Image 1 (cartoon, rainbow, N blue to C red):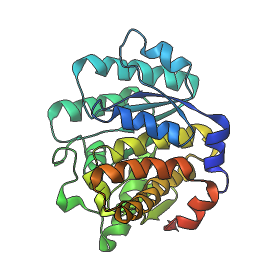
Image 2 (cartoon, rainbow, N blue to C red):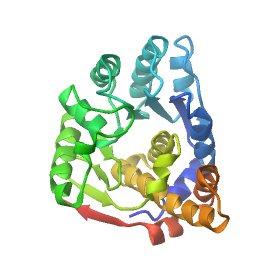
Image 3 (spheres, one colour):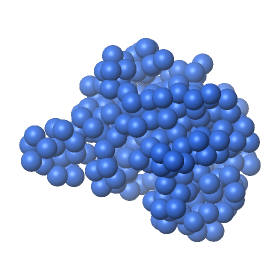
Image 4 (cartoon, one colour):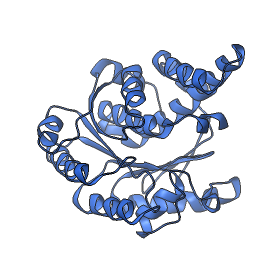
Length: 275
């Protein structure tokens, strides 16, 4: 399933335009470089369309949302749609405030997304138009557990059918689904939640993987989710060897992503498919 996904990114070096969270923008750029892509960060409306027109994919991340960049997101999204490019939405904190929720719904109305990635609370807000997101973390009542996996898969498939996008719900257990098929992914380490921006980094990786594998967006998205989780596991092991902490984990995570290849991804994945 993942035989050539990472090597395709290395061969094609997709240019990804990121209108993203300025708290994590440096790590997002470095992770794109590490996984074989190339980053551009441009969020002014005066150049959003022009910049998007030279890129292979677009990330719209509302983590540090402000009125100035909302129009840039819409303009860039429409241009990417016009070009047939991959567009990935990260509705960070959707449901936490009216502005975030309304912006997310506006983006969904005006832009066609290839992939929507978020925690389950954010994804529920995308579906329902309201939610109980606590900042950027999932509401505890929305956690995907072993006993709620089937319900989560059904929900993700339904949202995929509604939006036309692949849905990636990430957390302790990850679900990646389109309207017909789902993947359950159990890679990762709890300490990854102590690093700011692992979700933002993953969203950018999804864009790079999908832009290089446009014929298999579902599998490319699942591969990116596996890659982030597996590299988190490797990073934790390296951190423990050096008696490091969260800053070391962040560095080892980017290192692991930069060294990952198709064979290592296949060997390290903890994935199950469901029709």
